[in-house]
Image (tube, rainbow, N blue to C red):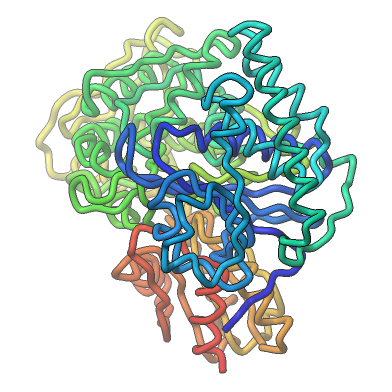
Length: 576
């Protein structure tokens, strides 16, 4: 089945690591947005510093565009391998713009429209082939109608530290690219592309990635200490906070290993800081003892877990929603926790900000689940509603008779920190009494476990409700969680436009799940869960927590995200 999505153009840049694809993406998307067009981009790349084959997909539209599609309208290949790398996404309507020597003999390119543009030779006329990326930016920007002045400004900002000559040559390269774009359009070689109307207000909107949204949410949550051991795809969050540490007063600690990372964060919370740990599946696995320590000591802690396909090293630079059960069940012994899984950039900001308040208030671990696709996807949005956020602090000034684990009606004991008040602050990893003394008394043990689980019921009662899109009386209910939101939402919209009775339910808090969600399922004759994993982990959790039976699971675990086309195709099979 062919899906047109006629209101957008899909561009793919494809080449080897180290060829500057990210530079082309950054300059082009920024200029297009400044010109008043809505822009979406997402990256896929191999696990290597140089070489291999990577691609970036950019969608441009007059309307908001926030989801991934397979279709390629324009392909810009930078290596011989590029065309074959994306061959499954090409069609007779795809236009390849590049050096023909790279693809004219490739069988995978024969059905496509081919336009010969040798970026390197043009760049060498200017002074060096290093300017070939700027030529490519000029060609694409010219075809799409981006204002040249915006790219000129971006180039000046990016290269001014390298001297006036470098800036001038890059501007010349972009100018040559614009001229080539005019020649291409005049030749009528391009396929029919949608015409766009610009909206000046878009130019001033935010243009963020999932990485940015999580990091800014942490700042808004009062984060003043971040620990991490570099591990894709989580490292970008730590790097963002490190880059902005002085402006926001954040201590950044790139630790020697993941065990150190979580234990340092534990110590920071103990002392009164608000710490974030950012990691991925393999790193989180090493942190489980520290997670249990937070559980028994009732220490707040916030962990960002950016998922990637496992087991072990797996596919370190691909995507998957495979760590839900890892996050839910990690740590020996029973203790409550909260799991968030943002589906939009705005949710990534607000849920990360909220995670710090929830951890502080209830003294539990809060885990934010993202994945490679989410972290490396960018689009524009009007705002993050940061004015609605508030840092809530729950640390008390202790009195001399203070006991850290005082029994209370709701299970939440007043939390003091060393040096604030007259009380003596002590925590212990053993089963303990109300004043933190080690004990093996079975009655106290039971009471302490019950105390901690009182908080779980509080958390369940205040859990974030899922988002319902569509008519609650619809016969078919599609369910997903986390990063799949925009892709599933757009696919469901496509089905509804074709007359199918379909509604969509998205969960951004995946634990604890409130019992009240049963109301969303009662009218559906068929329930379909969409997940980027092999076993339907969230479908199992829905059954376990709420007793909801799922009729069909649409699963993908290739390391790649769902596209609009395949979701429409797979869901249409189930709703017919």
